[in-house]
Image (cartoon, rainbow, N blue to C red; front, side, top):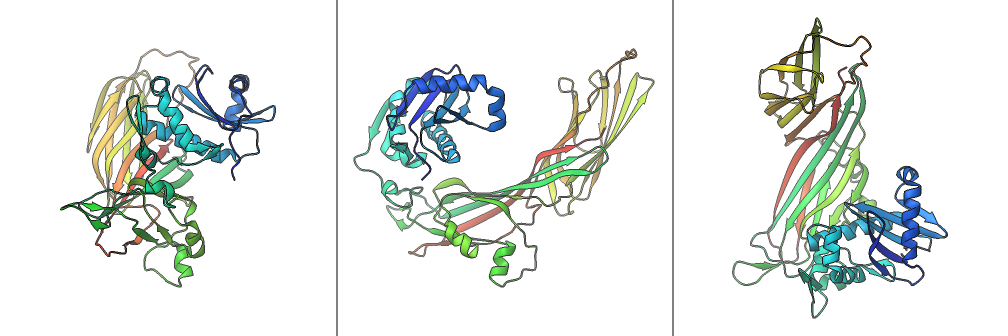
Length: 439
């Protein structure tokens, strides 16, 4: 067990208790005051140590959301990560009910808040944290709350993330494989940071048996997903013509059968209805920058500066980047810009001291140029402090492409009645923290 929470507190930014729920009777509201005093006294230490404080035998675990603090206090030895995850789930549930979670929304709906806290935690132990399930038997219209006559099947069923009675005209499963590339290049052209964060995002719309004409009722279909995971292929004694990959830091949605994955690397699950993140992963292998940027700056007698920048795509010709944006820093005192580009459009942003170059479509293995000329003040101080040079920042999307080479080998939907389902798979690569230092 994670260790029970004694109480849950919702506080404003000044530390005043807005709502609190006592679960075990061994703490009081005074503990919230002690928590906030400790938080203010050791604010710098908290940033370094994380969102956990201890004082006089009580452990405080907290998160901040806008103008609120959500905090659990526990006297028992507890799993802090579990409590912090629960607090984040509380935020998601409240936002589902109130759209925006703020101090005002809590004051307007405190009856519903208490009802939700009672259902989400029992005697200090987390219970139901799925907003869709809670909304089936705790219904609210502004300040009113309605309780269903009987708890829905999903509450008593082992599959708590999937409810009953959902209707669709077609069986469809959409899977997006999205990778975010993080790149940092120093002024000597050396790659000093390179990693890829990936996620498998799903949207499922599945039913089981026919209801009134044109509609269907959802059941419990099972999905099986196969990737070109090297460990899986070796375990099955298979080889692939394409590239196999080594996945790191894998995290699954709780619908995935972890025991099955640990035994034979098979990703098997009963999917929730609608959108969810099935899996996230990371790859720390060295990645060649997909869009490379070079810039040459020439100053003339301290009154004029010329910049020539090259942007080169370093991926295959059959792929293309869309919505490319390149932020090029320029001197803070630059005026009278004259900018020319071989493709796209570039604008000067004096409030940010940058040139923003936008390219709608950037094919692979291509190179484009930007030339800019600026006027500078003719008088400069002898002891002027050198200006700090900001890096070039690049943003883009590359559809139908992944850096890691991850591939969905199969996506099967298995259901007893044998209905047909349409799986759709899409690959997208985006720029994460993508910076190139030129100076």
